[in-house]
Amino acid sequence: MDQALAKDQVVSIVGAGAMGSGIAQLVAAAGHRVRLLDTSASAVDQAIAGVQRAFAQLVGKGKLDAAAASAAAARLLPATRITELADSGLVIEAIAEDLAAKQQLFRDLEALVSPACLFATNTSSLSVTAIAAALQSPERLAGLHFFNPAPRMPLVEVISGLATDARLAETLCATALAWGKTPVMARSTPGFIVNRIARPYYGEALRLLTEGAADAATLDAIFREAGGFRMGPFELMDLIGLDVSLAVNKSVWSAFFNDPRYAPSLLQQELVAAGFLGRKSGRGFYRYGEGAPELPARSLPMRAFPCAVQIFADGPPASALSSRLRTLGLPFHRADTSPDGRFAEAGGAALYVTDGRPASERAARKGVSNTVLVDLALDYGRATRLAIATAEQCSQAAADAAVGLLQAAGFAVSQLADVPGLAVMRTVCMLANEGADAVNQKVCDATAVDQAMRLGANYPLGPLAWAEQIGLRRVRRVLANLAASYGEDRYRISPLLARKVFSGKPFHG
Image (cartoon, rainbow, N blue to C red; front, side):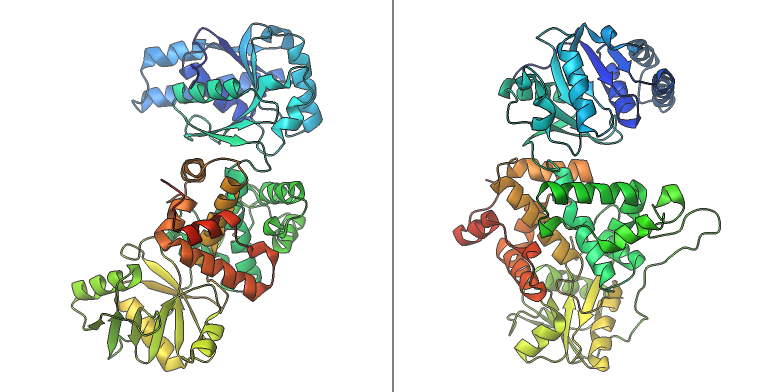
């Protein structure tokens, strides 16, 4: 890896909004002189004042020495004209997501700065190749995509366009590392890594809500309490802004020539059309503000512990259920082998982990009317909630017995409609599939996929590592069953994932 940009090099940042000011704070704290330019002088003044307050808060919390904070603040300088950036060693652009505006800015900079000055764009949605194409020397520009808030979020995507010099990308990686960030390298394709691979987290949740699988609060709780995600998809979209989320969805979908895998949601479009944009408008999937009602997750009422419980073989759900029941002193019988993949029986109900088929189909094909499907959990031993679906053929008594078993083991149980793949399983499999496609299409490597999604999206596990934990063969089966259930190309299996299943080789190692 090339050396990082020397500390005596000036770093100029164009754009004094939330991202630009956050990057300025980070770079000044790292020891560079920083010039901050915006078309609005007042925006620059406000940004610098905000950075100074942020440094003071860090001092107050004991996270930054007062002398270091004062020195960092002194390194942050306002610029009123682009000519003041002539001595820059690196210019980072963080202006509005407008291709023509970005191209014009870099053309103006190219005519001003020395040939040795490096160019970086913080774009999250535009092609780095297209931005660089406006330059006489397009090889001098790369993407340097920070995540908001830039001083705190550890990930930086270093994006190479078709013309980007490989040594420039290496220098930017080394520089980001010197600034205390974790850089991942990617090729310029729509959404780069995080904004591309995260699409199923929103897309599958929106489809589940549209199909009436459950309400938003219940689905969010399932993703948090079973899936281990920090925020559920609906509360996260409300935080981001539904208009912003929809715009990203449309951008990625359009850039991939309307690939159905990235298709926007009509439900989300309706909410945006109504002005229900999330927290910033006071209403999105939830209501906000004084007097707004809280929407609790729906859990099934308590059922009695069934008289006869049998747990089959090993595996995460069976092992966790056995351990929980044993700790509580509840009776059950342990069997070494399962007749058909079920992990437990209770009061006539057969409990299976979802394989992507609806419970009613699985019951019909297996000839087991009392089929109850259980969703994926990140860790069944620590999960506090599980989602289930019951076959339409299942008797109420059998369903109650299955619910009573899971509740006795300490799970809140949320009933979903009989949708294929339930919630966490289908979403994680789609995230893994998208990650596999990114690797297959040479956007980045498997390590970058997992690092980016953990550090840039706060996922509890990287999607490819999670797929290996589930079992790649099971992931492929879930996707195949989803494709069969919906009859859509949306659920097509990544060729790389298929190869890994057939070869028995993992993504890592």
